[in-house]
Structure formats: C-alpha cells, structure tokens
Image (cartoon, rainbow, N blue to C red; front, side, top):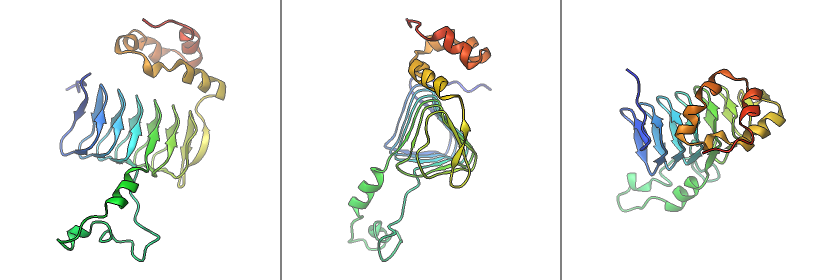
Length: 210
C-alpha cells in the first residue's frame, strides 16, 4: 500500500515520541522515532528508529534508519557525569531539575541544509552544520561541519569526495530548486528523473517560475 503524504504536515508512524517540534508539508516520521525540540522542512523524512534532538532540518532531507542527531552530553567538567546532577527530582522529591543545564543543552543546535542524505546509523554531534546537498555515510560520526555537496564517511567523519564540482554545487545552490512549489516540482519531475545535473541546470537556470 502506497504511503500518502500530506501538505498539512507529517505522516507519523506508530510508537513515536515527539515533543516541542514542528514539521513542514509532505514530511514523514518513521516508527519508533524520537523527535525533540526540532524543526523539519517540507518533504524531509526520517526512517524508523531515529533519535533527533535540538535540530533545524531543511527541506528534502533524507534520514535513514537509526540515525542519531544532536545526542546530548553529560557534564564532563563536574565531579560526576551522572544525571542525578540535573534530573535531581527523580531522586529527591524536594529537589528541582537543573533548568540551566537543560537550557544550555537545547541551545546547542544542529543545522542541516536542504537535499541532504544521512546514511543508516550515522551520528551527528551537537552544534554541527551540514551544508546543502551533502551526504553522510552510513555509520559515520560527524564531529565537525560538513561543506555543501560533500560526501563524508568514517569515525570521525572525513571528506571522501565532492558530490559535484564546486561550480556545479554553486549553481545548484543558486537555483534553489527546493524552494519550488509542489506543482512546479511535479512539472519538472521527469527532468529530475532523467537529466544529468548539467542538463538540468542548463534547462532551469534563469527560468522564471510561476
């Protein structure tokens, strides 16, 4: 049975936990995913078992299963790492949780550009920026920013190659096809499917969209 996505927001599969998050049109959240304090742009999706916190995710982002984005840190500069320091109310009813700790954690945002592909089981650390069109290989651990249209792999993730030459990447960024409306995307669908990137750019650069 074909999944029917909606312009009204996300298709959320069973057993998800979602809090303080917003989703654009035609988005999808895979089963058993956890999404906290995050935004997801139009047409983006995550497959099953993803754990995403404190992230700004662009449009047309492809997130494979079991990806972790923005994993939270423990206080390595304190006498103890344990969460009794900041989830104190779980141990002593008269204590309050450490709101300052949680506010600082939530502020460490991951930013993911448009048309990004994040492979199965990848981990993206807090405060990382991933540029438009980048690819993160399966199982990679991203500990520093990823430039647009760059493929990174490994632990820690390192540049493998450019997805396209820099000039082509620049032209795609300037074209910003991810901002086209739904009907315009439909009209260009056969070209997306069949044309090489240079052909596509030659056809659509400088074209006025209606």
